[in-house]
Length: 229
Image 1 (cartoon, rainbow, N blue to C red):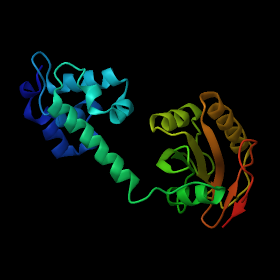
Image 2: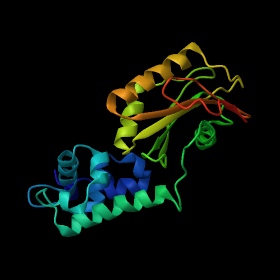
Image 3: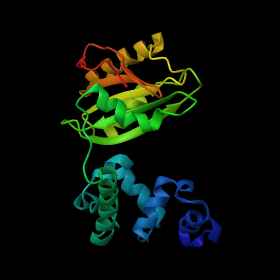
Image 4: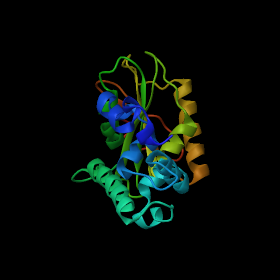
């Protein structure tokens, strides 16, 4: 069924205006950028073909316009529109200057806004380029008052799909304790091993409370500044 043949309330544009962008699938959001499809494929179908051509949405976001022209039905105007949209997102994320992670204290400072003042444990990943410039800060999980899951594969995937070369993680202890649990120590060890396996640099794992922070030791990190306010 073509998009124009759908009931008005089911069309991507109308659903976005009624319920917000979060109500749409990736291919539907991309279809709005495309505007229209081609003979035999509506805009949603063409969007799905584009994502499949690039491998996933992350790869599509990093693709230049010329790569998109290889998909039948995507001409210069559509390719340029998509490339421009994703580049605007990157500019917005970068801001005037990227922060850099050169120590445990800077990792804690970058993660603190996501963690301090929250009654449940959260885990945040900070993705960096080879020089330590922050590419992305992402909240990965939120659990209970004294625990939260640490999905190793999902963390590594987030770093890779964000174009990162290095990363650090942080989680909060709402109780105020800076002592790492056995699970915290095990997670740190597993993250270090997983990073090495895929060629990433694991910077650090820190515990953040409302008033202080503490580094969880592991062999591959610089041990400077283990505890701080």
